[in-house]
Length: 433
Image (tube, rainbow, N blue to C red; front, side):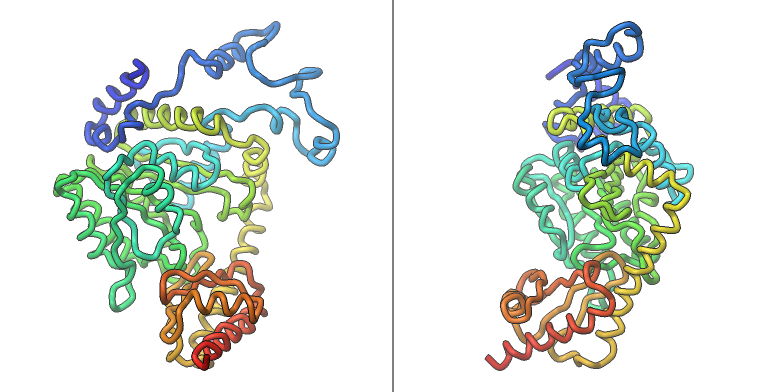
């Protein structure tokens, strides 16, 4: 093992030995090179005042070399904020501004000890970092039966972890905190679990209420008190899109510094929060009472980034930072939020209107995010999906035998009734076939 990795491991052990035990074998081996090209280049940038011949970019007239056909279209931005490499952890000011945003939007973080967000190449990259740092073959990764399919690729296929599912909803259609607790306590012999919490949930569009959130936190705490080390990940991809009564904060705020055996991690980003999907700007943030643990996890995370993508895209980070600092940002974001809320409310009004009855479908609770899910009673979800594509020109997502996901996020409000009329007609077609 590289001595730098050993030093980081010693720092984590000194700060919280349980967090060291949570690390995967790869996580224990990771480090950020202090004597490598990037660190030497940083030293030269600070002290080499005559010539700096270290970093692998080209310069001209004191700025990064660039082409007019690109810069002419980006002339609002300085070349130094576009063409050079961003630091592996992201632009420092962007990281600071995002942390301030987190504190505003999740007040329960006030007074908690947590690190500065580290920029990732959007949220999947952040989840991949968690998998590399903490998931080994045979480790339990716990998430509900209604989930984003990429979890299986990221943790199961890439890291050979064991998927442990529990039903998302109880019979009365509330969050199944007892199912989560049972799945956690079943890992007592392993002594470790990774929990993925995704709210608003993809695919159902559900966010728990305040009491449900308290029950989730209580389940995590109970597992820790039973001697289970828990890495709990708040996948906040759709954070902020809360349309009805639900939690309005990230559970990361409640989970931060909860117990020495709980390591809270927040994965979020501008991708969906700020409607910039293709910019690929996300963040990973750790919470710990120990400054040594936070510093060591940041170094290990930078090591993963250096070893995989080297650093994230500089222009995207600049664009996001500029937007976050704009006096018009809040007003423009609220305008888009209201459009999304209007679409969600329209879907619910249609489904509750009695127009379609409840013999062909019911719907899972939704109050947030981009999606909702129908539970089909009379036809196969995939058969309906294919029928709708080929006979109505309508695309939906089939999940298992009964569930059909509809993304109202990409349908205009005045088109939603036509969409659900088509789904209903397609079901009736298949019933007659």
